[in-house]
Length: 236
Image (cartoon, rainbow, N blue to C red; front, side, top):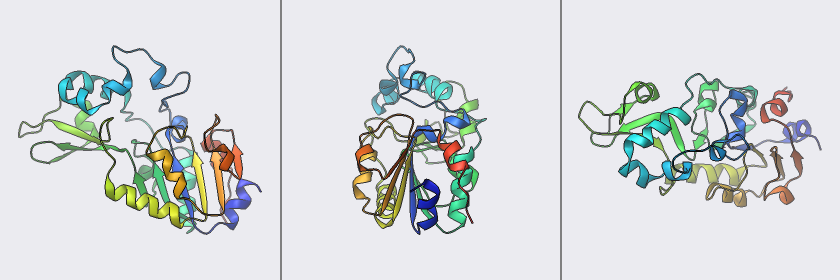
């Protein structure tokens, strides 16, 4: 079956996406040749993006965070826009994303489970006041709230756990789906990669440039850019 045929026959689609969904919006991924994890820094990105590094070297953390994690000019691409269309048609019941860029919501998607948080939510660690990503971008050094507290991005760092309510919602959507489209993810980051184990529906589709550990489970594998693939889908 083609992807078009699978989507046509589906009633409850869940979309599971990773960094590859946003590369066509000019946000680099992590593990490709020119990805974040193959660039050279004073510390490995996994170290800089850890809770312990954030607490002990906050100034260096925010220098890296502003430079490599914030993309204020990024706009939704064809993948994000097509998913909105599928959702409005009543076929898409949930988007489970590993991305923190907020592009699904910017495009207009409603039921989005952000496993790793969002750069658009930032909270004072003292008083809890909300601050925008623009506030983080424009601040110098360690961003501070009016009360004097450090403002922390609501993103899941290494050494931190995922949000329980987000996990429950995502797993419920996956468990109830008859079709699951997995796109732009290497499926090597846990616990997120293990979410596929909860899918018991009819069709599993993988859209990814490189092979993944779940290829043997898929009904259809497409090795092309996610935006190009979804952009060609027609929703009646």
